[in-house]
Amino acid sequence: MTQVNLGQSQAGLWWLPGTIGVGAIAALIGLAAYGIGKTASLDGIAATLADPTLVRIAGFTVFQAALSAAISVALALPFARAASRRPGWRPLAGFMKLGNLAFVTPVIIGVFGIVEVHGVTGWVNSAARALTGESFGPYVYGLGGILIAHAFFNMPFAARNFDRALAGIAPESWRLAAQLGMSSGQIFRLIEWPALARVFLPTAGIIFAMCFTSFAVVVTLGGGPAATILEVAIYQALRFDFDITRAAGLALTQFVLAAAIVGPLLFVTAAPAQTATGGACAARPDAAGWPARATDLAAVTMAAVVIIAPLAGILLPGIAAMTFERLADPALWRATGWSLAIAAGAGSIAFAIGLGILMTQRHLTVRRGRLRAGAALEAASAIILVAPPMLLGAGLFLALRGRVDLFAAAPFLVIAINAVAGLPFVLRLIGPDFLRAAEHHDRLAASLGLSGMNRWRLVDWPAIRPAAATALAVTMTLAAGDLGVIALFGTPDTTTLPLLIFQRMGAYRMDEAAVGVVVLIALCVGIFVCVETALGGRGRLKRRVFSHA
Image 1 (tube, rainbow, N blue to C red):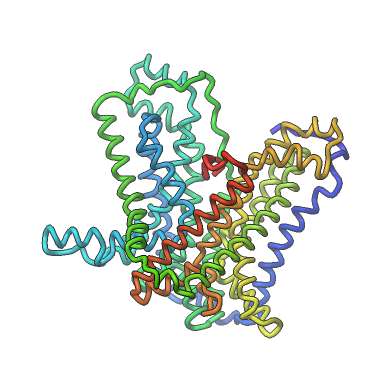
Image 2: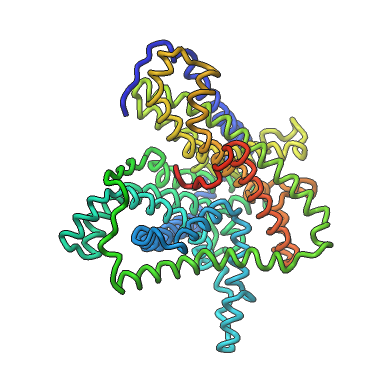
């Protein structure tokens, strides 16, 4: 990146927005640490760390996350190659849109669809009983169900990243491959893999991080102690036993493991894709022939099994279960109101803090050329990836106990934690456009004397507007669908839609849960469409969620 030296014209209090943002995060984490520290005992934490069951739980946490990441990228690679070979095939384009839907689908909704397809009375077992007289049993509960759910959520994300990497290959490479008569294997080794290698490790690492702390999936599909991860064990220690000391020991283990495995990835930035220079995209020489067609068809079929079946399992039961009485349930609409309030609060706070951090990062990276300092600032802002959100909430709860009305404060704690959790998405989605605008226009803005709100209105906002709309929409949608923190603090008066669905699924009130799922889908889609339309402007809805992922 070229350093831009503007002297004092663009300097001023450049450090203040980022300092406020990181300071707010540090204050939140510090307050939580204080609450835990004054309650937990060192001897109890040491006993927890020496517990043999901790090794089993930690081992399973790492194992399921690594296996989930491996399966997701293994399914995504052949699909991305198929999409690259056949860019005009409509089913592939449709899948990419469904992948966007899966990305913003709240976890509890995805789990509902997976249970509908793979559960004991689900479509797969019902078909097996009809054909053979026997079912496959409750395979969805345990490691199998966890892997199925993680593939549903993460395979489209990996496929989108790999497809973008392959799209950056210059047409000249395909023409040269055709002239040399390269086989499909040679094309993959010499042309495709160098492009994929830039994004492969960061993509796999992000998926690993999401699966490492995948509370909602494991708590619903884990099936028992044999399939428990650290995040669920922390929840059980806090919610059922109120054993702060054990929760602190478990959280320390999770933090160390996550920092060791995921932490380095916070400093890894995928190299930018090369820009094609040959005008229209050249045809790939390995697209013809029945082996390529058969391979691509198999990849698309597998994607349909992984993605489309659960989506159908989400929508069809909910539509079928809709009645006026269920839709008129006051608890349903009270939960909807809480979900919307939490989404609006968390999204707005994450958006504001993210912009402040990016302003400071812009000065460090673009104007002073201090790339490592800018990366460190972004990594510090993404600390939530290695800090257990539920223990963070419990620490805040303990720190404020006796000082404020905790029942009244619970929604604000949920909003604060969800805002911190959504911050990495804001930075990742807005950051590239924001920094690029500074690199391209800083000198011109300085020569014209543009600063403050005039610069924001004429330079920065037009450059980041589409990405800003997507970032706010994604952050609000994720907060609306969050189950982790609200499961710890939720009361009958502060129940959100995900918690209500979880409670009704646990009570086997599946029809009522299905109606809640449809309402939550409508809420998330409504948030996404309204925010993208109002903030991003008309015609922005076609912008892809993963364009900066």
